[in-house]
Length: 476
Image (cartoon, rainbow, N blue to C red):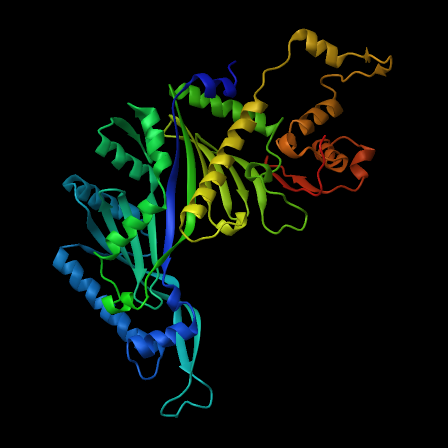
């Protein structure tokens, strides 16, 4: 039977590496501290006593402005109920806007959600003073959020979310594959779309060059283009005084899509992959995929698991706030995705600039590549008959010392083979304690004096999920 390494080599018609989903937050640096907040109200808005009540008046004026704008632009307004699928409701309206060919807001959605807002109160003992001193603090509150679902000529479908409470943050959702599709349309290059990706392309090399070209400049261009078109709580005088937004990364997703020539090839890939990972060669340590050293004192959750839901296979790994997943997309393509939810896990800043962007992209692409290479290494075919006999029979070494046999089928031999083929040994090697722990977990039904020795932290659960927190490692 053809192994899955051969399938990736011979049965893939298109491969595309691209930044996928991007979730950003825009914030005003000059409204992130108490001093700056009071300065904004006192000197910029001429409020005698800075308080959250003054922010409430500004916010109400902003809400009125949004509703007047929506009415003037003919944008439908929808109050979302709890549990409703916002994207499903907005999708038909966005598709209708896309047919018109120019950028516009397709739907204004309003939903109550939790957010951090500035609140103030009178200092204790000054409740009845004419000009009391105010205490300030950020608090969580359920407030109305405004979703602007829009179609952009460069980015396609996107949404812009904000609220009317200081410090007036903005959240953006963009998709790199949709951006690449718009660039292909402008270049006149034909392609067949895959849901959130590509099934085929007339010029795969040009497609990859376009995907590689996506950078923070395109993101900032989108933000400022729509910042000037949508209602804002800031007046031109506020912007001239330095009350402008900065962009920060909340979620950064890098994908690697390999389209199979036929669906059967994709099915064969996952059948072999899951079968091998449930017995021999299962992933043992996610840290190797992200090239990050872990110790027993490193906080966070580290796990690898293989899931099968219905007929849709999925391999899912986690490392702190980062997730690496691999699944069969639309019965045609192998999609490998690295989702970075906290850039500080990799000592990368959150600010959207070229340095941080390139660093995050390199981390994601490296993680995707490491997973696919590790799977290919694990898919080497069985040895020939002569090699197999040489390994499983007693022999004599060149220096005349006898070497015992490794009897194939013996429980201890098979457990040793399974332990040595773990992905966690590919780069970092293993220690004797780690090998003993793996053997004891695989031989839980076979009494062994090795199982009573102290070991480092590793465990294998009954569901096929392997969790590890390795200590000091050495080359095998």
